[in-house]
Image 1 (tube, rainbow, N blue to C red):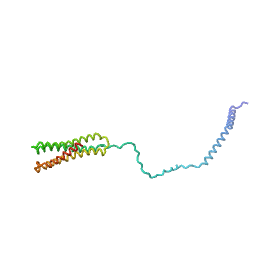
Image 2: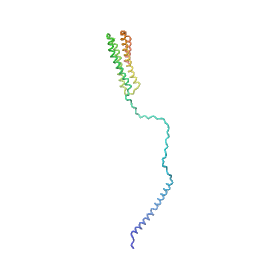
Image 3: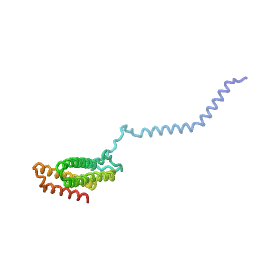
Image 4: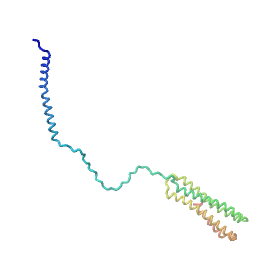
Amino acid sequence: MKQNPWRQRLLLLSAILIVFGFLTMPLGLLGLIFGLYCLWYGLQLKPESTSRPERARPRQTMSRPQSMPSTGVRPPLPEDRIAEYRSRIRELESLEHQADRRLAGMTEYLNQLFADSQITKDRYLDIVRKAEDITDVNLKKARTALAMFADGPVTPQRLEILDGYVQSSREMLAKIDGVVTELMRAEQSDQLRNTQHIEEAMNELKETARYYAQS
C-alpha cells in the first residue's frame, strides 16, 4: 500500500511542534508568572499627582544697599579740565592790556602836562612803565605755570599761585589809575606846581612795583 507524502509531512510537522511546545513551556510559564507579578505590583502603586510641588520661596529680608564694587575705571574728566586756570589767565591778559593802554595814554598826557619839564615827565613815565612791566611779567609767569601743571589736577595750591599773579596785576593797575586821577585833579584845579598828591601816588606806585618785582 502506497503512503501519502502529505500525510507524512503533516505528522512530522506535528511532532516538531509538540517537541518545541514542550521545550518552550518553561519559558512561557516564566513569562506568564512575571507578567502576573508586574500586574499585581502596578495595582499596588498609588497614582502620582500631576501637579508639580511648589518650591519654597526664599524669605525676603530688608538689607542695606551695598555700594557698587570699584571697577578701577575713572569717571570721565570734564572737557576743559583747566577752565579755572584759563579764567585767571584771561583776567591777567585783560589787566595787562589795560595797563598797556594806561601807559600809552599816560605818555601822551604827560607830554602835554610837562612839556617844559622833561625830567619830571621821564621820571613819572619810568615809574608807570615799571608798573606796566609787572603786569606783563605776571602774565608770562602765569602762562608758564599753566604749561607746567595743566596735565595735573586742579588744586587749591596751584590756584593760589595764579591768584597771586592776578592780585599783583590788579594792584598795579589800581595804583596806575591812582596816579592818573591825581594828575587830572591837579590839572583841573590848576595846581600842577603843587605836586604833593601826585608824588604820593607816584611813590605808592613805585613801592608797589618794587615789592612785586622783588617777590
